[in-house]
Length: 505
Image (cartoon, rainbow, N blue to C red):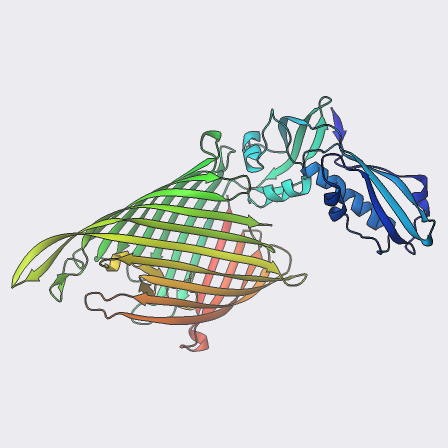
């Protein structure tokens, strides 16, 4: 095999005479092969009337060659046919280019260098490459960025293309795999208020890239003040049976002291487009069982109804970040819409008799999460976005409502301080990068909660602002994330302290 460069240039002897004092008079594209002349002219970073230096010319030729490589012609040669002084304007230059695109290549196979677990077919799926078929595009830097953005690799170098024949080639990817998993420990302290103060704890175990194919296993346990606990277990395969379909199975449970117990089973099947966009279809079954406190009657009605809901949904997922731990540029978007029915069973007092009634109600749910990252300066990054959760039903139960507040949502308030059938959160965060992934940040956020009328609770709605500062620090033990958040209704010393430590396994 022979190493292959993505760009090959041919220069005339007159290139050595090029000076920054010359201005371009004319640019001519004599031969452009499969790409239109207009495309080549638009790709060049200079125009007639611009000053031309050797560096600018080199950058322009590389841009043209890369444009052909992206179109499936990595052997393209950019040839300078003419680089002379304009006879009508002696202080100006005439530039004439010709492009020899070379043959289209077939991708023989993919080789991985420096890996132990990663499988070549997984890399092929991530980059939409098909061994045995034509190499439709070749952009080494973009390929490396796409692999680095997954967070599965500690180091990714641009791949090298090797010829194995006249029209066949091998792609070699130098990779260094990241740790196969992490343990995320989140601790927080919230001031006492209405008996809800104290220590908040959460453990999150995540195993990633199982069997070298990007599979995941997630286990999370949360402990909140007031004898509230949550449990979540998920397994996911991003390329089910080596196809473009993904599968995610999940189970979550919530124990609200002696009020109720909630179990949630989910199945999500997704389809991944070459651009990275995913569309999903989902099935969800939610079971709510009241405890002793939930069986009590309030205003003649059982406090928590026994219920079973079945919902079907549709979603969109788009993740495009330059680096997962401290992004400088990118966008993430998750949208999930669900519709289904819930069967309720409850006791209520009618004409001095306690009767059990059965009802069937329709539920519509919409959940969305958006994050936008944009660099404002060399080390300054703007993070903006929001969360939205909407529930529409013929009848509402306390167990159905969304929770807002705490380390993972509205940080200036207690964990799950607010509940409602409509919640929203707006976020603006300014980050100053030190040595990535280390950065300091300040944030402003506002949460909106609307609560429907419930037994013993009147309907209400309102906004709840918050703000704070924090630090993310890379240590020998792992990634440390520390924040101090508060809201304008409480003293500065009564803020919420959150500490999260991510340990590599």
